[in-house]
Length: 86
Image: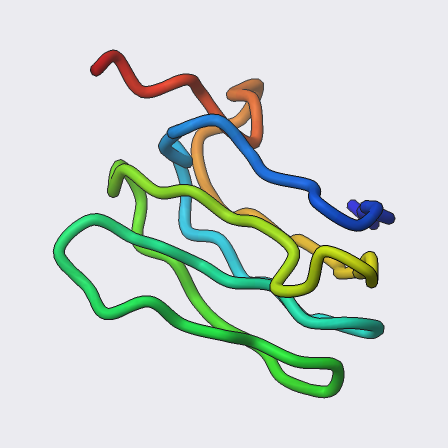
């Protein structure tokens, strides 16, 4: 799945039911996973997310969007992300 997001983009707090692999092709995003240090991921870099870990992602710049490819390995028929009940 390819995502094109604009400046100031931010997800709600959520989880992924499967293993998620992300490759950033343009721009930079911040990935804030509960219990981990904030990661800044730029074009040409990739990262991995464990299932069921609450997280938020956002563009790192208020002036620049980002493009990234997401590949999830998990239960068939499950959505790529689910809202995390706070």
